[in-house]
Image (cartoon, rainbow, N blue to C red):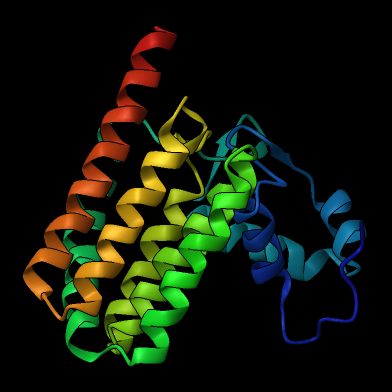
Length: 213
């Protein structure tokens, strides 16, 4: 699958997007020649992109090879802690600044996502779009930038918590509660409901990890 015809995306963006979309998952080995062929670019920009991703800890060394990094328990906990605070702030600001049209879009997204309940991977992508829409509705570009960095690291989680039995439907109920709080301009409640939503997701993920051991 070559991704030619996208001059606005450099090798770094293309590889990052592939990791984010699950084409390359934690533990996947990245080979310069294969990446160059896949994306239709020369090996030099691929090499530079890999070096940049390694510096950002999105890739790690396995001998002489580079593989997509994975998060250990401590890193996952740290990421959720930061995510809760930043996303809680985004929800609070969205309650203050979101246009009615933005709120309508959020509500429509939740309703549309019900059709994806039997497809955890598609629901995970939709979940990310929903959260990003809240970030945008905060109308704070610096907060959006920081949350983009957090979500970049979220791609290093091997499995979505939405794959757990019954979690998808419950998550959508939580999403609608967040939208309701934003629509009612209740910033404190919007922040708390969103933080609770992420806390539940973290618990689900911890339970799944514990069952592996």
